[in-house]
Structures are given as structure tokens and as C-alpha cells.
Length: 218
Image (cartoon, rainbow, N blue to C red; front, top):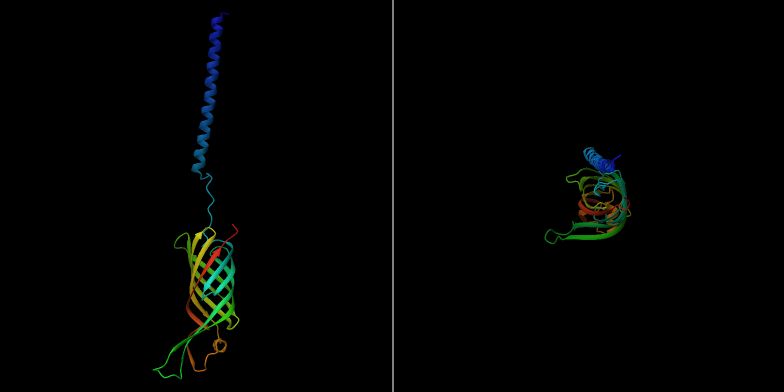
């Protein structure tokens, strides 16, 4: 056979192989692009994991509280998100604002006495309202035991805001009631029998408090 014809056939074969390889590469790229487009359309792209807001996240949290509603307290909470329970314990300031009924109106003075006690609390919280994704508003209702005032109850409006995925700040405004505890408070603070209580820890209205809540386990 003519050598020129063989050479021409060989070159044609190499050209055909090159075109075939190029076609395979283009086909592979096309399949990759189609799969990427399908993944994007079906939402299968890998998204960064979103951490739940600390203002209404589930799990176990540790807390530190300050204010008349909780005293200087440490505690923990466990919940499913917007619903859970909280336990606290610590120091509680006792207050009595009073006037002496035996004094004449012209010389009547308002007195303030303070004392110390320890207090335990157990509350249920429910925070169904979320003005922002990182905030929550709700209610707290619970039991109190005070070493001076004994058994009582507490109720509060709570507002939480997330400082980070694992840290939240809670503000509280509410009241505490210790039935039949006025005499114990008077004895503890050594008030005169003529003292007319204007405000006392036995029944506290318009009390405030703050809690810092930390979720160490993700």
C-alpha cells in the first residue's frame, strides 16, 4: 500500500481520537454542571449550620441572677425552647418601708429597714412571643422558699435577648407573695409594733431583676 496513504490514515485516526477525548471531557463537564444545577434547584447545597437563638433555645443552661425578684442567685434551667423550668438559689435582701403610727403628722418620718435571708426558687417559663428572631417575651410563674418569710409564690413578665448563640440576657418585672409572713418579717427586722408598713418583702410588687443565661453544651 502507498506509504502516503498509510500516513494520512494514521493522522486521521489520531485526529479522531483527539476529538473523541475532547468530547468526553466536555460531556463530563456538562454532567457536573447539570448536577450542580439540580442540587441548587432542590436545595441540596450544603448550608452552614444555624445555631438556635439563646433567647429561646432548648437544652440545659446555667444562670446568674441579680435583683429583688431573684436576689443574688445562681441556678440552672432546662427546656424545650419556649417552655421549660428553672431552679435558683442564693441571697435575698429583705426590705421594710414603714411609718410610726404613734408619731404626730408633723413629725412623721418614713423609715427603711433591711435584712438578709436565703431563698430558693422553682419556676416554669413560657416565652411564645418573638418580636425579633433573637428575642423572646413571656411569663414566669413559680414557687419560693425564704428562710425568714417561708413559703411563697412569684410571677413575672420576662424579656430575653440573645447576646450570642450560647448567651442570653433576661429582664424580669413582677411580684412575690409570702402569705402570713408579715409578723416574721417584723420580728426579723425588730420593727416596733406601731410600725405601719408601706412596702415590705412579704408582698413585693413592681420588683425587677436580671439573669445572664449561658448554654455551655451545643
